[in-house]
Image 1: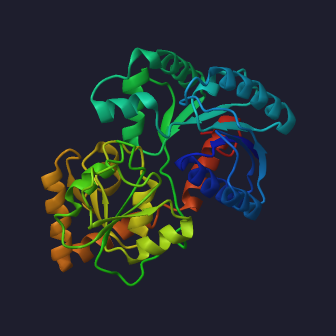
Image 2: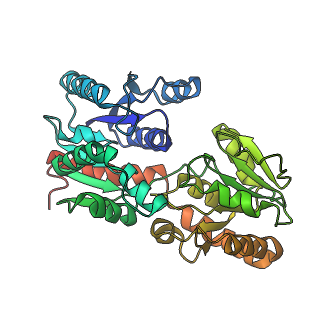
Image 3: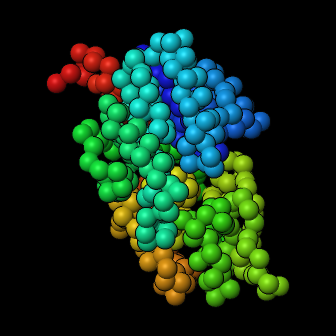
Amino acid sequence: MKVLMTADTVGGVWVYAMELAGALKEEGVSVCLATMGGPMTAMQRRQVEALGLDVRESGYKLEWMDDPWSDVAEAGEWLLELERQVQPDVVHLNGYVHGSLAWRAPKLLVAHSCVVSWWRAVHGEDPPRTWNVYRERVRAGLLAADMVLAPTWAMLEAIEECYGSLPRMGRVANGRDPRRFVPGRKEAFAMAAGRWWDEAKNIRAVQSVADRVDWPMYVAGEGGLPATGGAAWPSLRPLGLLSEEAMADWLSRASVFVHPAKYEPFGLVVLEAAMSGCALVLGDIPSLREQWDEAALFVPPSDHDALQAAVVKLTTDDRLRRELARHACQRAMPLTPGRMATEYHRTYRLLAGHEAVAG
């Protein structure tokens, strides 16, 4: 079976695509990966070379970027030409707008996140009217898809709330290779991860409580920390953007992982932390509840006092910390790339009309 899959080079979809494409290869599925959003980094090139992937690279803007529509149109023509060349059995789109193209093959669209649901979660209201074109084009792409999947039911519900009901939907949780994220000798520090300027990740909440927690707190991610007007943040220590290997090392040693997100359609970094044996403090939002209920402490994302109390509880209660870390690790272990690939392969075969899946 052949699949033409789109991926962007600037977000978490890249990690998902690498895990899925590598595992699909083991299932006998050949993936042609069409990249957009910017050139691949040297690390990304090494990843695709290691997997032996057929990659077609472009620099077209993504649909959520500033003034993207001429690029989106050119990317659509490029993708249709790729389909003619590759002759895939299924087109797997990790974006929305190109769902409405005149594809020959059945099209699967996977909802990883979107501007409208992000804006509602972060700001509590719809985005400005300047996003109306985006909203209408995303809706058209969703309605044209033969199947829409998302990594959580919560994300599917958010998509329907934003764009209306969809006829064929399903959930396939994302996966990470547990061989890359293993518990190590735990140390007395907590960790967070995310772009500090992304309000959805809520790193500012972590910053607000860091000086009220006895353990040091480290944060990984691009952008550094917001200006503090000269104030010091001795307990919050920025690590910058880490390689996968460095991130795995830090998570293996961290005892607590703090992620008070306002919006998180799945949360690959939470999965990595759970596989690494960290006790979890998470934002109390539907998607994270769906994945980690009874395996984490949950706090309202806007309640900084509750966040501080949860972190202090785990840093001072060794038994609870170890118990929650064990529960989270047990919950995480089945979420592998192999399991994810098997479920996607089943969906591909269903869309392609293969008799083995019919009925």
